[in-house]
Figure 1 (cartoon, rainbow, N blue to C red):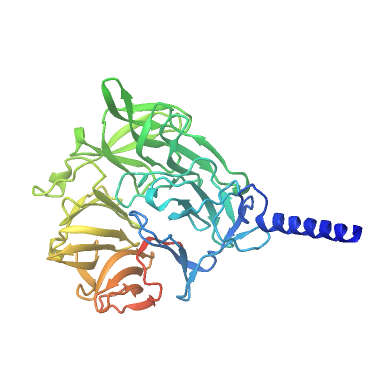
Figure 2 (figure 1 turned 90 degrees about the horizontal axis):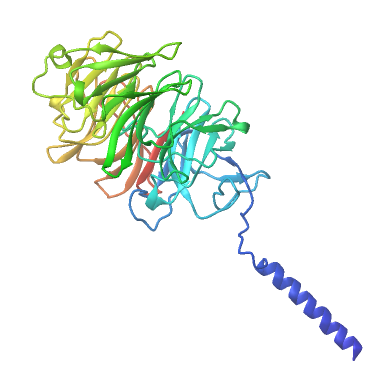
Length: 450
């Protein structure tokens, strides 16, 4: 009898041990909890892209892929410090909550930033990592992550801007102050990233531009019992603040690294902002009588950036307004000689996407009921069609400094969603090389990183 009891006792203990191991206790943690992310496998990638439409509701979870230098499409993997592949992306505390990649930005030759969050609220990510291109090593950005649609207010504006020292600047939502503030992050030593709030806690920042030295001009608002008051300020590197009379205007970093602006109260002049060694701020007329100079009386450049693209090539800066898609404003070419570039021959009625290389501008836009993909020569405004409008509906694209284009499109012949590439040098005809058609997904984020 005692032998039977002892046998039953051992059986009970073994069963209890197996139950505890199988169930993992009662803490509700997954196998990937408390495991810090160590690397994201982006090595040898030329482009990164995310599938699924993160700007709308979708049951499909966005997935990160890379296009390698030899044209292969590979799903990007995430690894812990032991080299184990993770089934989810943990935040900086090592906790997984089913977040997905929602934003990618190429920062410089060494780093990119990837932000993660919920697809339905992609403009407000939950966490982000600085990722080293050479080996995929990740470094946490801290509690503050970039939010909003674009830092400088232009349609193609990037969330993150940099100064000549490589510091990062971006707008983030402060839960302490319940408003959007500006953040500065020093990544000189990625293992010891430091950051600071760069604007006063009373300012709700809407968009900004940072010059090469780290001085920032920003547009903001202040809520009061009488409603919101809109204004602009300059934050100097010594911590000083200077108010500006204009309450709303476009501003950008010029070819020389200085801040330039155009405002409602002075929209016939483009001004240059200079902060000298003694931190004195001066405004000087860079271009006066703008429309007289370019001989334009039919179209006017509005000062608001919300409906405009900003193109910056190696030697030119152009503002392209979607309200007037037949003309581009060349506001900086190093010679104080602004000009209007007439592209009415392209017959663009609305813009889907636009960007530039070092020497050309590229636009995907609607024209006479179809969608055209065109290249524009900034020297004379000559437009060249890259893709026949009856073959593809291009939804997004990236371009290298040397005019190598990667694009995502709906192929009309069979309804497939493809990834293709074009060498856009020369006058054509241009050959489309299919990179992938097996994924058959719309791309929501596409970023060239090498």
